[in-house]
Amino acid sequence: MKKKIFLITCALSMITVASASASSINLEQKPTEASKNVVPMDVPTGYGAMGWQWPTTVTTLSDPFGWTGRRFHKGIDVLVYKQDVYATADGEVIGVGKYGNGTEYVTIKHDDKAIEPGKTNNNLISRYLHLTKDSQKVSTYQRVSKGQNIAVSGNTGAATGGKDNNYHLHLDINNVAKDLPADNETIDPMLFYPNQLSSFKMDGNASNDKELHLYEDEEHSFDVSMMNHVGKEKFDAWFDNLQPHERTRTAFKQHFNISDQLLNEILKKNDIRKR
Image (tube, rainbow, N blue to C red):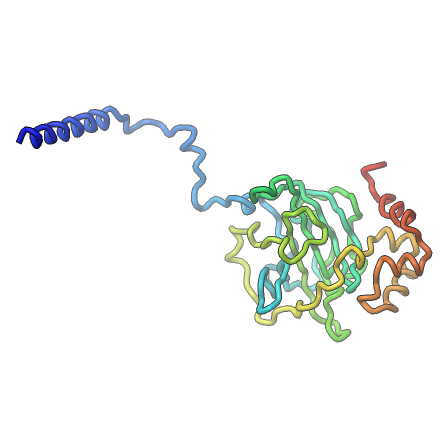
């Protein structure tokens, strides 16, 4: 009996203390600085908070990021026909040229960094592919601003059966600081546009992108400075006379009698940072 009375007494004491504490709270107390920093649910976070610009004038997608059957798509395809292409964010152009499959491209290393653990020192890199031939308005190592016009969309490297078809802009972004990312090294570009998702739509006729991105490695890439060194007409004549798998830097050097040392000098010559 004494034990029960003791337990009841303790319980009453705890209730009294709790009530006293509650009565001492100022219900009109102003929010603390920490509470002011709580981000509302409708405010973008992560990549969505970086404020990147959409890369062109159309928001219809013909092919999304990720797996489609047995194929992995490194980026997104925007169903756009010969429209301006814009830099998605501030950065430095690190590639302008053509891949062995005929795709004309621009590659930008951005000032913004990756947010994933272990990758926060990596600059984000974006690629803009299938541009109209010779439409690039920037050069390698040039600084660009968000929204700057960098090229015109097209279908280079994408036209099937030699026809005037399959126009679209391919955009991919990677967080591993690579100008030529592998399939597992890109992130979904749509992460950067959370507040615009309602304006996007998918077209039922997805672009035929199954094999478009073959021959997009360093050995099959040609910077515009390489083309200018030998002359654009001579380069195009050599390039157009070969099959995609034959369009290599090794073949380029042999055909135009260019040594490794000279090639390095050609590529560095365009580096405006050293002027």
